[in-house]
Amino acid sequence: MVAQIEVEYDVYDVEGKKNTEKTSINFKVATTTSSYVVHRAMIHQLANRRQGTASTKTRSEVRGGGRKPYKQKGTGRARAGSNRSPLWKGGGVIFGPKPRSYAQKMNRKEWRLALRTLLYNKSNNIKIIETLSDTFNTVSTKQFILMLKTWNINLSEKILLILDNPNPNLYLSARNIPQVKTISRKNLNILDILNANILIMEKDAALKINEGFNE
Image 1 (cartoon, rainbow, N blue to C red):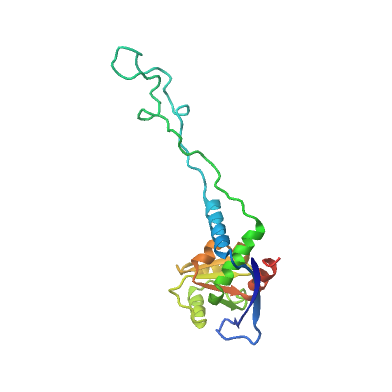
Image 2 (image 1 turned 60 degrees about the vertical axis):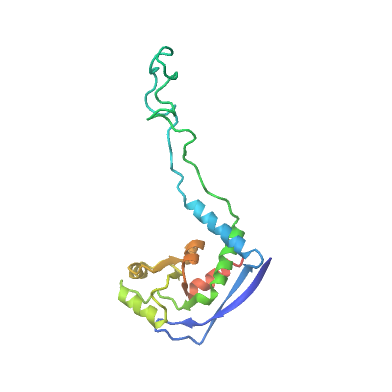
């Protein structure tokens, strides 16, 4: 079953002050199957990340082995036709891995439902802020850390910063902090949300996520 839930958030500026206007996000979420949908999306993302490049050689691909190692009879040993048999050292591999695709199919609507459901489950840990594009004209990790402190965010927590558009200066400013990861709203994914304790979201990003994911 799917339910639509609206959550209202305060909007903070770069100085940590609340704006007079609030913003709301409509979450169209799964109810009875929420854990199943999120788990399926997580497995889908993990499977699609696998390269699938592991490869071994069969007895037909291993170099050599064209000549019969020794005569058929009279040696007291088991008969052998090639020294590249899987039974021999340096021989081929039986049923070894070959390059393959681990990708799993998942419908777009189901993927979006999983994202919305997970975002709603993390709704108490979401903080909405004003746009930061004009704030970071230069790279400054110190400025970013001070900004987190003004928002009363503990630096020991894992933080996911979701931007409306990629910002190189902001990305470089946050890159030196191990607990912080910066992504744009277009790259929003299950694993990053699951791994984060606190989600900091730009107001424009939140509005566009609200519009796009509730189609």
